[in-house]
Length: 162
Image (cartoon, rainbow, N blue to C red; front, side, top):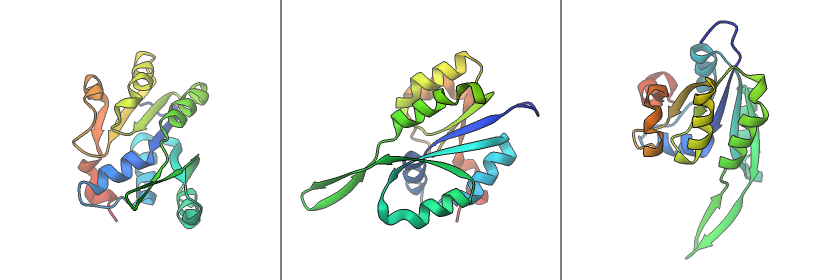
C-alpha cells in the first residue's frame, strides 16, 4: 500500500463479532477502527449491521469511533420459543463496495464468509484488494485461493480485545 492510496474497509459486523466471540474474546470496535487506519491507511470504514431499535447507544458509539454504519432491516424469527434476530448484510456490503469502487484504490474486506467470493475475486483481478481480515480460523474454503490476502484478526487479539 502506497502513501497516496485511499483505502476503504467493508466490514460484515455479524461475521466479525460472532467469529471473535467463538474464539473467547470481545472486540474493542474503537481500537479496531484505529488499527484499520494505522495499519492499512483506511480512510472510510463501512460497517454493515442489522438495525435493532433498542441498540441506538451501540450505533452512536460505533459512529463516534469513526465507522460509517450501513443498516439492514432485521427480521425477528421465533422458533420453539427461541427468538433470533436476522439481518444478513452480504448484499449491502457487495453493493456498497461497488458503489464506492471509483473512490478507493484498495479495499479491505472484513469477513470470513464465502458469499463474498465474487466480490473478492473481482477486486483481486482489478488490483483493488488489499486484505481480507478473517475473524477466526474457520473461514470459508471458498476464500482459500486468496490466502495471500488473508490476515487473521486473532494475531492482534491483545491489541484489539476489550
